[in-house]
Length: 209
Image (cartoon, rainbow, N blue to C red; front, side):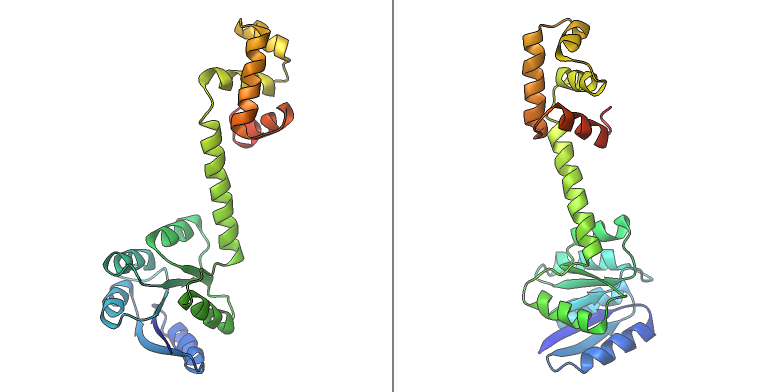
C-alpha cells in the first residue's frame, strides 16, 4: 500500500482527489494538510511514501514546504500538483527537491499513475514542464559555449555577422589573414557549429550581436 500525504489549501480539491485515491486498492491517503507548515509537520511525523504538494498556500507555500521537508528528510518523494506553469514556480519547485510535477488539469487516474511511478523511483513531469527544462538546459549550454570565446574571437564573430569576408575582417582588425582563419576555426569549434552561417545564426539567437 502506497501511503500518501496530500497538502492543498482548497478543501474541495482535497476531498475530490482523496476520494478518488481512496478507491484505488494500492493507495491510502493517510493525512491531509491545508497549508505548507502543516504539510511539513505531517510529513515528518507520518513519513508517507508520497507527498502531493500544492504550490500556492497560505502561511507557507509549497516550494518552501518542499525545501524544508527535503532538508529534514532527504528521502521524501514529493509530487507537485498545481495550476501553475510559470518559470518562477516550476524551476524553484524542482530545485527545492520535488520529484514529479503534475497539473491540476490532469485526470485523476493520471495523478494516481504518477503516484505509483514516483513511488517506484521515476520522475513524472508534465510535457510542458519537460519542454521548459530542456529549453533552459539548452540555454545554459549555449551560454557555456560562447563564454569560451576570447574577446578577439567575439570581435571576429561580430564582423562575421556583419557579412564581412576573412580578408575584410583582417583589414579591419589589422591582423593577418591566416590569423583570422585560425580565429574562425576556433569559433566554429567552441560553438560546436559546422560553418560560418551556423555561427552567425548562433550569434543572433543568443543576442551576441
